[in-house]
Amino acid sequence: MSRSWGVVLLAGALLWCPHAGAIEVAPSSAQIEAAVQRGTESAGRRVPPDRLYAWFGSDDELQPRGFILSKLVGIAVMAAHFALRGQSPTEADLRQVLDGPSLLVTVMIFGDRPNFAVNTYVVMDQGGTTIKPVTVRFDGSAARTPAWPNSPAYRAKVVASFNYADLDPWAKTRLQVFPPGGGEVSVELDFSTID
Image (cartoon, rainbow, N blue to C red):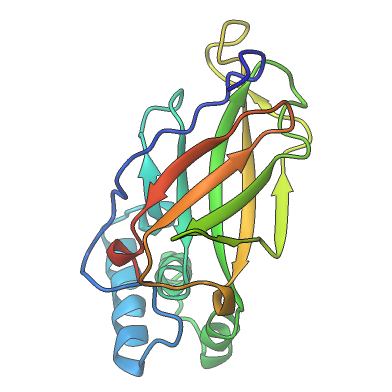
């Protein structure tokens, strides 16, 4: 790993794991209803909707972290946002999430320049099979961390979308981050802990 990048990605267990299984590509009506209920109940307890994401890494803002947004997690998050406004998602709202072809994975990486994340690339490895993303977006100008001007001075978000049709939702998965300055940072993801 390149020192100039100071890119670190913490291999951590996913923090949110309400049940066993795998990422649900075609959720049932009962699963959709349970996700809506989970989001609505979370809003009633004033839990911020972003806490419903499938998080990995640390809660410390100077430590690496990321989250996965699957269909059912997306529905729970959406239901929480609606509930906080005293509303419920419509069938069309739910259908928009359910028809989405991609799993979103967001990772925070750290570096020493504002543009350090430009052209960062992300892939998944599932048992030796490389899954390429449909899209990768990254912060062109990273935000300063509270440690600035010391290291890690900047934090950038990298968002990769992976086509569900390319993934095995039951397979052991390694997320690999390739910063343009060289090196590879990877983290194991356990799809059995999210829906």
